[in-house]
Image (cartoon, rainbow, N blue to C red):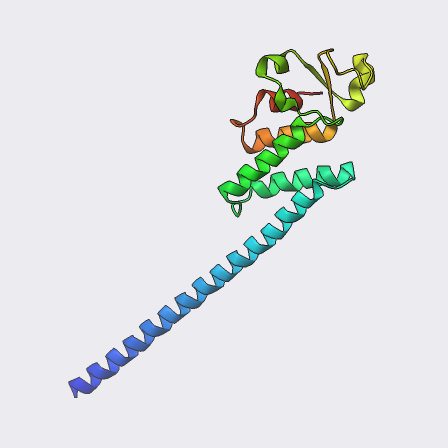
Length: 169
């Protein structure tokens, strides 16, 4: 009689353990599927933000920069994606509206510059095209936003150019 009771108990315990393991596998599978879906949606948004950076509309480019910064701070972003975002934003910060790349300047040249936003040029007493040789660099609001985004994402990465553009008032 005790053998029948022991067999029944072992069968019950085996069924309970099997059910518990099945439940844990289902929960783990659901969590993995949810993470994969979130990562896929994150990737779509990241791609859209990168696409927006090449748009003709300044407003759209600024929105793309903002979205890129936010997405790069997400736990879903890999180190490589963060590095890519910082590089893209650094390029946006360093390229003036007339196409000059300020990264070609060394740190001493950058420190000698006066960086002003395009909408502040009249207050600075200069023409918008008076950049060559004057020590005055005119930057756009987009450049300032991109430079500040770089410094928020990677404070240690910001070059002298990024810091100068971010400081433009």
